[in-house]
Image (tube, rainbow over all chains, first blue to last red; front, side):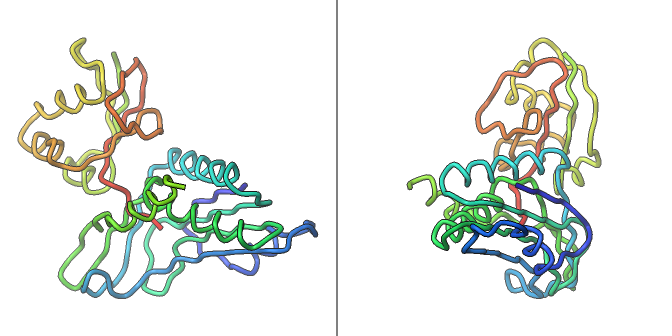
Length: 151
Length: 85
């Protein structure tokens, strides 16, 4: 289980290689990469600034991974989330899971991402042609998280 | 009781404050009482911490989903709903 908060970009191939290294029981690797869109809620996005609550962020993400591991049989879980200034097209977040079978790895990856969206203390501020503004939380993210509670 | 306060994102910007060490009176024993007490600091505080604002609270870096009791030395954070990922 690894959680990294960093300003630097990441390389998916390098991270996956390290995550699966030496584990020949692994038969499934699932990853999700979130990127900065150039449009959000109908407005052009020039850049984005990501703020977080240092200390709590790491604890919250570690707790989400522990929860995922209690629900599904997976081997390794990695979450990388970038902070600071980013431009459209930039990678923001990576969730990668290794396991023996795809079903559990897919589910764990989606669960971690859904929980991250609603429980990890990150905030986005977008710079648009009309000025800067903080991004509003989406009710669809809450709904995505809540469906896991029914299972 | 002394508390370490933390504010983030739009709340931090609105208050012009990211953290503060405060001594609260005996009447402040819970997260809800702390929020009400802070609202009495002035117009900006009353507005930004108003119950109509959907704010989250964390105590010692764990989300406090409900009103919970505070202890001396606690770190209490207030912030808007999160928007990471």
